[in-house]
Amino acid sequence: MDTAERLVESTRELLWERGYTGTSPKAIQQRAGVGQGSMYHHFAGKPDLALAAIRRTAEEMRALAEEEFSAPGTAVDRVTAYLLRERDVLKGCPIGRLTQDPDVMGDPALRAPVDETLAWLRERLAEVLAEGRERGELNTVLDPQAVAATVVAVLQGGYVLARAADSVQPFDQAIAGVLGLLAAHISMPRT
Image (cartoon, rainbow, N blue to C red; front, side):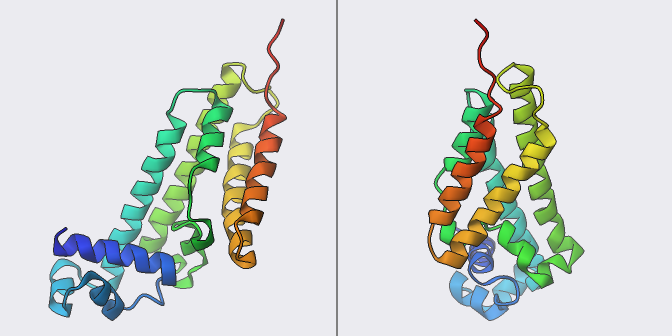
């Protein structure tokens, strides 16, 4: 792994653990095992490096989600697989956590990949649900956009509840709840 890559990966980890304010250039350099000159050789400063790290995290999050969304199976199978995939629940969502960071939300450049990723997630879920409705898997009263927004809100809220309780149980309960609500929209096959 080259120096720039170590800097980006270290920043990703620190942003997830500490947030933007708690991630100092010195902490990044120490985690990456590089000197100050190396950091500023590759990046203009902390905001530039943070943006590269957030973009990388967003790309990886999208790629992982897309694996589930484009897999074979019904729409509900694919959404279920996405929601039940392995996650580090008590650390929270590496993108969702950034919405609570005033420095990230206050900087349009840093906020953009966060907003774009969550918007992509809502839209992609809506596409999967609309496909399920079109194929007759889900009943026609299901509003794909509204349900997709609900799924993302429950997922992000589940992380918050789990972190507050220091237990994955509230997250698991929230996911089971939203899957139960989604199951109520499964169309029964006609005989």
